[in-house]
Amino acid sequence: MTEMSIDQFRLKAEPYYRPVGNEVDLFEAAYARRMPVMLKGPTGCGKSRFVEYMAFKLGRPLITVACNEDMTASDLVGRFLLDKDGTRWQDGPLTTAARIGAICYLDEVVEARQDTTVVIHPLTDYRRCLPLDKKQELLQAHEDFQLVISYNPGYQSLMKDLKPSTKQRFGALAFDYPEAELETEIVAAETGVDKEIAGKLVQIAHRARNLKGHGLDEGISTRLLVYAGQIIAEGVDPVLACKMTLVTPLTDDPDMQETLEAAVATYFFA
Ligand SMILES: Nc1ncnc2c1ncn2[C@@H]1O[C@H](COP(=O)(O)OP(=O)(O)OP(=O)(O)O)[C@@H](O)[C@H]1O
Ligand SMILES: [Mg+2]
Image 1 (cartoon, rainbow, N blue to C red):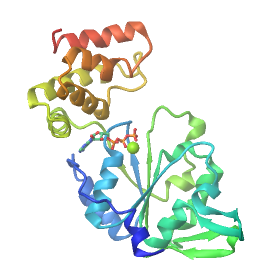
Image 2 (image 1 turned 45 degrees about the horizontal axis):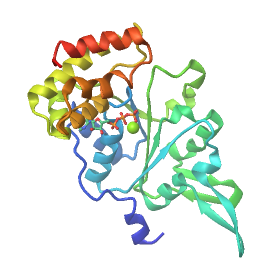
Image 3 (image 1 turned 30 degrees about the vertical axis):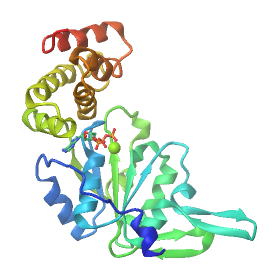
Image 4 (image 1 turned 180 degrees about the vertical axis):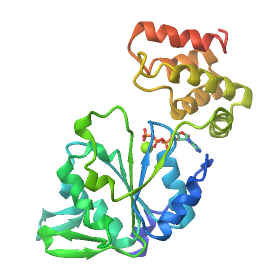
């Protein structure tokens, strides 16, 4: 692969990421040993943003793959394609990352079937290789390659857990929604609303997060708070903005919507 095509996977500018603990140092230590890393945490808490930030900070290209249950090993590794001159091998994203020394981020990896997930096994132990069976090539990973996976523990069924032999190939960092002051800072920085408004949005989220398991599958994420701030920053009335971004997306249950709207009403008045 040419330098120019590697450049397409480089982040052009430093992503905004506000560290919440020692995750930056821990990730750097893991990267120094090229240890595979797993990021666990609820939706919209900053996992993807963190990987982008770390790839930029470490000066590595980043290749992200959104995993799903229809994904096959060939989707990750590559396949032969037919074109006018016959067949031509095309690397999949995992293979590309291993060749060019990128960080490969497999997002929501539990969604993939277990027989798909096992293709990462030889890449994530001391062998650091990827057998391209169909091509009869044994690819040795570039020395800068690292594999990162994310998953959201909780809402998947037990059937969809990772195998122990997959899990135990990773160091893991647990993510969660940041504590109030930090989350306020993040929402203000990401949207341009002032700290007072951002702080109220965070308080509303705390109310909703207490309802997790009591009628809500997931609380309001940092991502949704950023959405709320963005709509408010566009000049929309906060009550309407909160309904659009914090209430309606979260639940279809009318009673639960009413509960959430009441929480909004304690902080913002129509
Ligand atoms: N620590 C943080 N610093 C900066 N922004 C953050 C941080 N945490 C969350 N955010 C904001 O929250 C949004 C959602 O984060 P992100 O997309 O990284 O979530 P995620 O954990 O990858 O969620 P999912 O599991 O649904 O993919 C980001 O776009 C960003 O605006
Ligand atoms: Mg993500």
